[in-house]
Structures are given as C-alpha cells and as structure tokens.
Amino acid sequence: MEVIDARAALAPAISLLCAALVFASGERTFWRRLFSLSAALAKLVIVMSMLPGALRGVVYVFDLVQFTEGVGLAFRADALGMFFSLVSSTLWLFTTVYAIGYMEREPNRMRFFGFFALCVSTTVGVAFAENLLTMFLFYETLTICTYPLVIHDETPEAMKAGRKYLAYTLTGGAFVLLGSIATFQLAGTMTLSHPGILTMDAGRGTLIALFICLIAGFGVKAAIMPLHGWLPSAMVAPTPVSALLHAVAVVKVGAFGVLRVVYNVFGVRLLDELGVCDWLAALAAFTIIAASIVAVFQDNLKRRLAFSTISQLSYIVLGASLLTPLAATAAIVHIANQAFAKITMFFVAGSIQRVTGKTTVHELAGIGYRMPYTMGAFTIAALSFIGVPLFAGFVTKWYLSLGALESGAWWYALVMLGSALLNAAYWLPVVYAAFFKTPPSTHVEMQEAHWTMLGPTLVCAAYVILLGATVSVPGMPFALARAAVTFVFGM
Image (cartoon, rainbow, N blue to C red; front, side, top):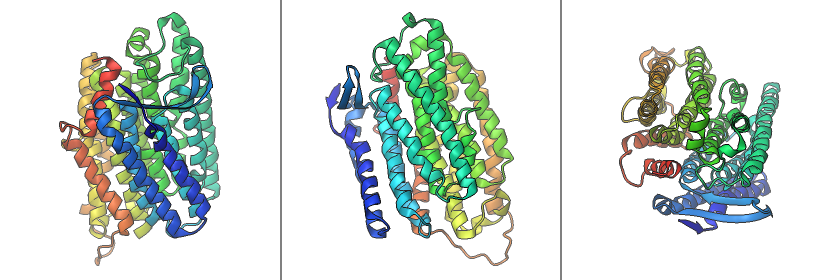
C-alpha cells in the first residue's frame, strides 16, 4: 500500500538544512555542534517514525518536481530504502558525536561538518529515490560533497587522493547516467517501484550491455575489483571521513545501487534468463578473496581496514548475484552488519591515533592494557567479520552460504569459509598483539579516548552483538530485510 507522505522527502532535506545552518554559523563551535546533533537526531526520529508502517507493508511516496512526462524528482520509502536509511541515519548520529571529539583541534571544522551533513543528505536521498534520475542526482551530488572531506588536510597526498577519487567516481557517475537514459528509452520509465521494469523485448545484447553499464557505474563506489583503486588512497582523510566513506555513505551507496539495478531495474526473472549474474557473482567472489589476501599484508591499520571493506562490500554484490531469497536476505542485512562492525573499527583506529599517535599494526603491542574498552570493541567487530555465531557477521555468512546452496552454486559457500579464515588471519593478530604481547613500557596507565569518541565506539560494538542476536525478534532490522525480499521475489 502506497501512502503520500512528505517524510520521504523531509528525511534527506533535514541534513540539507543542517548543512546550510552549519555554513551560516561560521566558526561558532556551540551552534555548529547544536545544529549537527539536532539534525542527526531529527533525521533518525523521522526515519524511525516510518518504520512501523514499513513493517506492515506501507510504502511512503512523495513527488517533489516533475521535469517532463514520467521524469521527475520523486521519493519512495520502500522496505529496501528504509533499511538503508535506518543504517545511515543511525550511524550519522554516532559519527557526528565521534567527529565532535576527533575534530576538536582540527582546522576548517565549519567546512568539515557542513559537507559531512550534505553527504548524509545525499545518502538518504539515494535510499529514498523513486527513480533512476533522482538516484543519479543524489549519487553525483554525494561525489561532489565528499571531495572536500577527502582533501580536508590539503596535503599533497590528500590532494592527489582527491583527484583520484573524482576521476574514478565521476566516471562511474557517467556510466550511471548513460544507463539511466538507456533504461528510459527501453522501458519508457525510470521508476524503481517495481521488481523489474525491463523485458527481453529490448534484445539480449542490448540488455547485457545495459547491465554492464549500470553495474560498472555503481561498482566504482561499491569498490568491485578492478574499480577499487580510489578507496585505499582516500584513507588519507580524517578518520570520521574514512568511517563515512566505508560505513555510512559512499561505498554503501554503490552497493545499494547494485541492489536496485538487480532487483528493481532488471528483476530476478529477467536476469536469470539472461545469465549475466553468473559473471558478476564470480567477480564478487574474486574481490572477496583477493582483497582479503591484500589486507593480510597491510601494516597501516587504516589501509588494512580499506581492503577489508573492499572484500566485505562484495558480500552484498555476491548475495544479489545469486538471485535467491536467502542470498538476497544476506545481501540486504549485510548493509547493516558490515556498517556497524566497520565503523567500530574505524572509530578504534581514530581513537588509537588520537591517544597514542600510532597508526600501524606492528606498533599495537600491549595497546589493550592502555585502552581496554576501545580494543574490546575492536575485538567484537573482528569476531563479527570472522563469522563467530551470535555476532552480526555470522548472520551474513550463514544466509549467504544457504543462498549459494539454494542456487546450486555450492562453491560460493567455500568462498565464505575462505573469507572467514582470511578475516581471522588479518584481524586476530591485531587482537593478539593488543592483549597478549608485552607493552613497550613496564608502567602502563589506562588512557581511553574522550567520551565523545569512546561512547559511539562502544555503542556501535553493542549493535554488532544486537544485530547478531535478534534475527528472529519481530520488528528488528532483519524483519525489514525480509519484507524487501518478499517484494522482490513476489513471495
């Protein structure tokens, strides 16, 4: 059931208003913090207010502007979009609190928090986009708004990373635009409100070319190999920006775009007939394993996190490619599972850097004695990525493996096993070094980061456990994922 409701447009608009107020406040710290925190809380309340209806099957729609017949700026908060917006709006609140502590002594804080708010506005805009044009507009705006954050330090390395980021993501955006126009020509619509709008009448060759075009466009931000080159370079940005890139906004928008292409532009039945998802699944599996192998050899903690993100994002792509309900469930819930675990790790990396100045894995001997709560949170996230039961990551691996068996592609269950072992290979040594290696000094005093940084870290770690332990609880995020899968597969 569709209901006209302005909240579908108000959710992205509230962050846009926040950005305007932050820029207007200049360097007045109190007002900047007040606007940022108030808007983050307001957005979360707006999105949460739509959750009960979404769980009952209600879809909130709102048309803002119509450019030409069938083409306009419109919003649609369906189950899949609600799931993504819940994750991003929740994490925006936590990241805002963390950033207030982390950026305390940094220059250009007005610019940082202003563009930070714009990024979240565009992310929720993508989540609630009713059509490909609306999605493209927010998708490209996200690229532009993220650039000042990537180059925040304005060092030669940061500027080079920014240019690389723009080269990759703007090229990806061009492919999304081309694919959107082609879709409109073939289907007569750009809507994302149906489980597939294309048919075989367009011709097999044309459809395959269109699929490649759209997947390549969204695959840049989803960091599918070999389109991932911008992501490790972008780690020169401040840690809250890295957290934004990896857990809240950019890469998740890319993965979400892949889901929309598979489930709402083409549809599972057409893709099953075309057979093009077989190569996409193979590419995703390659990315999962290859990026994990590279991560094992990274000594810089943030670069290890970056290659871990590249690997983990392809869980979503693989789940979508298998075209089964169980695999689709895994793909959707992994948006949340990866987000909370990964942002926990980035928060930890930033806290360690702020308190100790350490940025590499080999420097972390005994850090658990000095920062026990921080490293405890890191351990929870690490166990989740490995796939230990009762943690969020286990849910993803379990359902993705079941989805592989359901599709008859049992070998992807082995990919999950290999990924779990590789995750153990590059995360457990960090945990071991933190708690079981002798600290450099015999006299170690406990020194955690400021509460504005430690608090969000612990809360996000708690979410990792919550998401793993409440799969069968009605009303929890998993139920929303099931609702999205039911719509996509017509169950």
